[in-house]
Image (cartoon, rainbow, N blue to C red; front, side, top):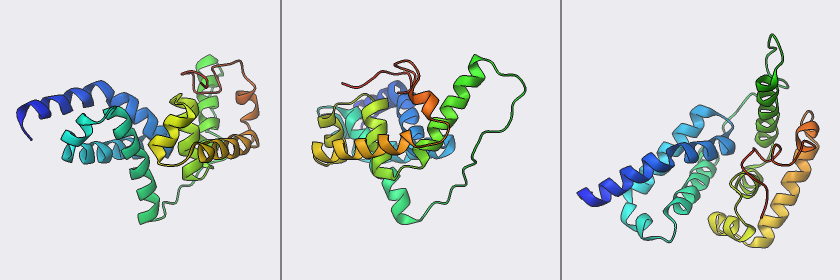
Length: 181
């Protein structure tokens, strides 16, 4: 890669790394898998950076790569994950621990969703993308996004321990980054 595209790619990675890792974490439910997934997507983006940089939104392009790489991970081999019903006990309960418990409940619930529903819920409610934007990222219709979001949210509502989180004041149940459009 020549010097200028190389510099553009490096600047993109510096600016968007933590955001992409957070999105990958919500897709995978594991910090190590999230970093691996982000690195895999960025390695693919690096190989075709000229095309990625020419797109209307390089971040959306790489986000799509994240979702695709995550789906590929399940196609190539079934990943078995052993999730526990509850997080380990902690000595004292304060607000930070309560938020960690809520986050743990949300991550457990997200892990129980099929990959497509999880991707829709994460993109729609965490990334705060519109239905049309999610449809574009996932390469499907807005009707599919609507139905997958409805099914995903319905399943999340039945998850034990998540009811309190979803009934919390606005902003807390959506990961704290915003609501819907």
